[in-house]
Length: 67
Image 1: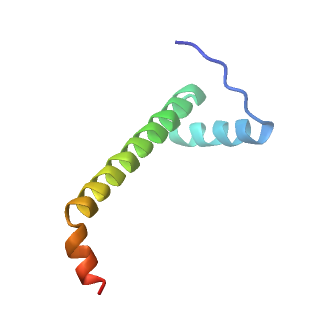
Image 2 (image 1 turned 90 degrees about the horizontal axis):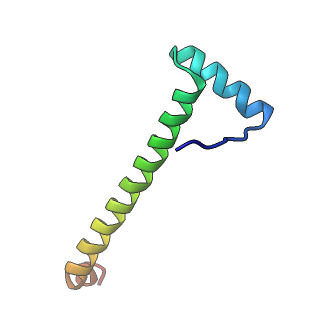
């Protein structure tokens, strides 16, 4: 799927500099950033779900520890 990414001049300059430093194209740098953003969000969702599972399962023990 193709898309247009509109960046400010400052963002484009920063992306170009970072891509050059990594030895990759600006497109590859942007694709990596998208993958990292998605992976980070998915990880945050999994951690949140696990924390909820633990707190729900052990709510009584956690309540007693707080007393």
